[in-house]
Length: 247
Image (spheres, one colour):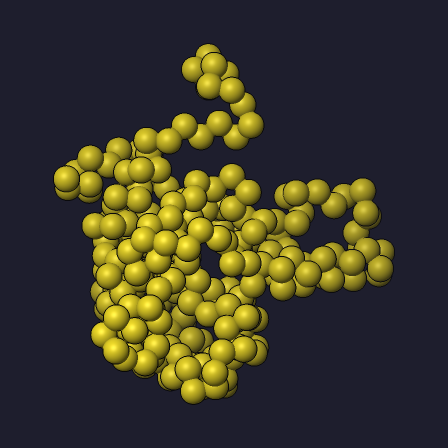
């Protein structure tokens, strides 16, 4: 089945988030180190970004490195940071040709200085692009994000610039890393694991979840289209009944 041809154009999710899992297991299948899987995962990123742009997705958020990932072996972390710098260098011109804008969420200040500088360079170069917005979640965790938002809100209350009674869902949205972005309608996780792993917990309150056994380095835009096809065939009720939606 060619899923792209079956997609309903006016039901394409505006925002898709992906937990890119399975690089290590993919590498192990070939008797290689985990970094081998991360290197080949770049091919999957390239294909998925291309596919998302083709069908009009507005935001694509990729969980590239969590705050918990800092606890991995130093050799792997260093390799990931090096791969990140190299990938940004290699891919920015192609992103520019595809009219893709870049945004980063997470504790960016905790990243190595050379990574921060390369990200700043790429973001500036792609700033005028008007197509897909590619969002990289780096040194990110949802609990960290929510705690930081609460701290900022508490500070505003402390100095008298915000009344506690004014705190609501919309205000909280504005203090998150994803402010000015729609919440993801679809969250995809590869590798067969069925958990969220501290990713966009506030934002995915009503996202549709899609889990695939395919390991990330094998994931391609055709798999993205299949996930969207599955999404389009679900009934999204947001707490209502099916009868209410019909009426």
